[in-house]
Length: 260
Image (cartoon, rainbow, N blue to C red; front, side, top):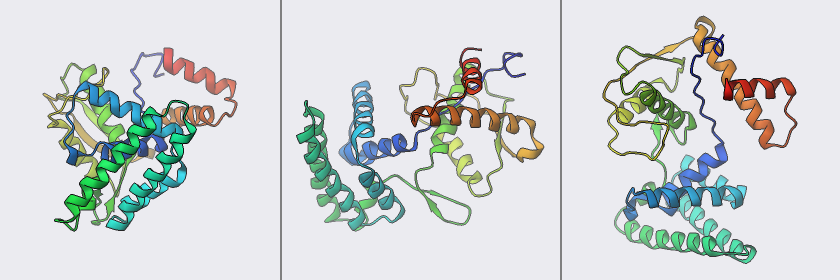
């Protein structure tokens, strides 16, 4: 029915390892404390570093960073930094062209020096090199929620699709007993965003705002359709990434979703 009636279908596919690598680059390698600008060149550098980390960084280093987010402290951050230094030293020996490995090692060393300066004056300095947590209704801090960036990206894509005319449009999200307030706050923050992310299919300049509501999936046909599409896309990309043969029917459905 969606395809037959030519309804547009927007999907955000998130690789959790890649998502964590983005946070490592944004918080550790190119942290806000070092005041990098938001030029296209810096965004290009971020993308190169994220791709490089994704292909090479050991799971142990990723887990160290996740642990530091869940239990932020001077010790957990220093474990992350020390682990990255050891990783880059070992990577330099492996790479035929070690330029990026050397660059990453230099970045980590600069952050260690910067952190040392800030830590001498501020006992909470480690928080400046970790993602900002969100807070649930029960005042529980939650780190690294991929669904937040997916939501804001979809919202910005809708903004572009509708030429910034979002008045009267209603977003219905699956009921979220723990994250609904977080999603509302993220939506508000997105609507006043001053930056211009370099995403050709999105528009982060909001003139009008859509409504956000939460619906129970077994009572909302739209949410049920979204669940089916999301589950189909997830299984396709998960199996493809793991080298599992994709069933012909699933492949056929994905071709229809991609090309109509």
